[in-house]
Length: 274
Length: 256
Image (spheres, each protein chain N blue to C red):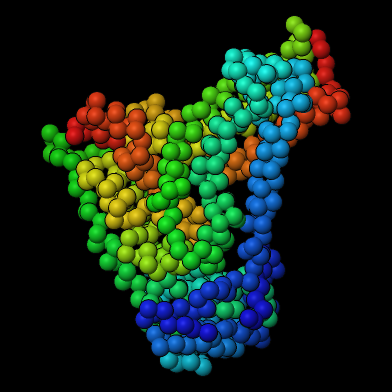
């Protein structure tokens, strides 16, 4: 393996002396039939991000290099890859965070089938999204409106920052290292989606059974890699997955909650009579 | 090299391209958490000779409810170390804690050892099967642990009294800090966050629970840090009381 190293944030900038420098990147080239890493050396300029270098390689040395990208601003979630083994957005990884002279390794996200080079087929995530019951609002208030209060909205607002880069899905070891779990596990991105709906003050759909059986929430062992790689800094584990786990516990594992439900006939979350 | 797996290509399927010190965090966890478990086991099994240094009592033995206790409530006939009757509750709380689960799944089970580093086990069922299914009862470990914390506060207050006189000793402050840290750890728990209001969809209709939930959520953001601080300090408190009881150190104190 080539020597790679990263400079700690705040360290001396490579860009300050980027003029005349070159960078060597080791990029995965191949398709479903197989492939290998290939090295490319290109000039480095001040202010470059990893995606800029990949584009330069594409323009100068490998016109057929496949890479998915769109906004180059960290908002479209297209350019997900593994940079020195860490899942990241290429457009948000600055070149001056790497030690000058060291080879940088870029590989496609590994959890999904490879199409070509750095492009993978992420349709698994969209298939899983289809299984999530849609928002089903409460009836209108007598004046014909629906109301939400800021206290309730704040909690679910965070989940709507998701840009669907699928880095969390990629890093989740439940499907990354155990292909067989893809049938029965939705993954962190979908848990964020489910939390946005399940914790919504106006939603009336009950997704707890789906969470336990179909989405496989119990597979998550909360090792927090999804949170670590999220470029939008969503607290996926603490604010989405664990609150959902606690709701599933109340519904399926907590004997006192079961007795309370039977005695009162009410769903404590929403105050709804069952 | 690439290997075709079920029609898809995995790049270096059993390896990682990470070249940073990803193994350092699990290693530190194994050393600190493993060290704590070993020390606690030793203190519970062999350490019942020196757990009380008037007026201080080791947190591993409090509340001391066995009839063979040197000090305490003494109402349960018991022939073994009194710590077995008590320490099991806070230990169960930590064992099922959402943070410690992350720590030991990564460090001891290598499932995964670090992000984007392959799992060591070949198959994986997560918390869907016994014994890890029991993790779902974390909230039932929360309540007994909270009761123990109440007794630790009583111990901390007793630590300021010596034969009817008010006193301040280094041990008094150690017991006080220990009670404070364990209280913060317990109240920053994810299950606590759920129980005080997280289960509600419309927190706005419950102002008191909303305020509680906000405060617990604030603590919860620091749950990992509090978990480590309280873990290390509770062991330190036991060591302090033990050394004072054995006469190895002299507790500096002012008696009024």
